Image (cartoon, rainbow, N blue to C red; front, side, top):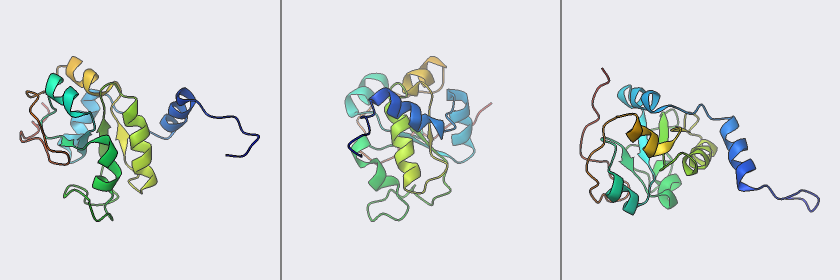
Amino acid sequence: MAVSERPVGIDELLERARLDLDRLTPEQARDTATAGGLLVDIRYAALRERDGLIPGALVVERNELEWRLDPQGSHRAAEAVGHDLRVVVICNEGYASSLAAVSLRQLGLRHATDLIGGFQAWKAAGLPVTAGLPVTAGLPATAAFPASG
């Protein structure tokens, strides 16, 4: 940052990040997953245990996200199959996920986006949620994602 530039606050940073994202509603996220996209839950363990999991979502702690989803990375998850993968990042309320999706785009995952309203919006929409079981970071939830109807 040049000396004459003012610092960017978090609200402005978030607004700028979202300019390039095609953010999804819970129903659009469900449809994306059904069509082969990858839902990625970056909520921390206590929230997953308290509120539950989205069936079929890959659970990756936020501090490991880039390492696990970079298709060229040596620590990538098996699900990180290429730069064309449609990734929907999910946090608790849809704030951290926007910044995380932009970070994935910087790694070349050009279809990375996030869920408007996060997990709480998913749950409020009445979409499937399983009991909050402890899940090891980077491993998928055990339940298969149901087809949309």
